[in-house]
Image 1 (cartoon, rainbow, N blue to C red):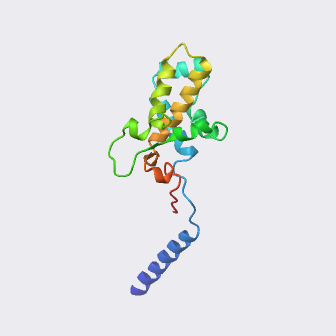
Image 2: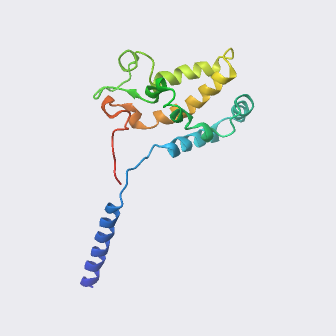
Length: 162
């Protein structure tokens, strides 16, 4: 029936308009995103690695430490730029000399904390902190906007409404 199609179309349009009225900012890579990446990583770790995390660093679930690096940014301001790497728009590759000359970006910090973690001469506290930074930073580099345009602060200045 022609009248039924019109009525159905009006209902669909009404529902779409209602959904626009309740749209809120999307935080697609907030705490849950980091916890999900950490849970996936933990599922893929070898049993020996899980044992080392538990015995040596008192970490039983990577999700529990996945957001630590974000929580400390206010107190430890030097860590703020460690969460992203700015690559100029139009460039297709990362160049340390251009994109992270001081070593204070996520790509260099992953290297630094990986080395620190392997260094048995470092304290347990330092190595545990390295694990917690690595868990967080690996999730950060899987957020595409954390590796790119310097103008959007690692994607944090882009607002999306759903």
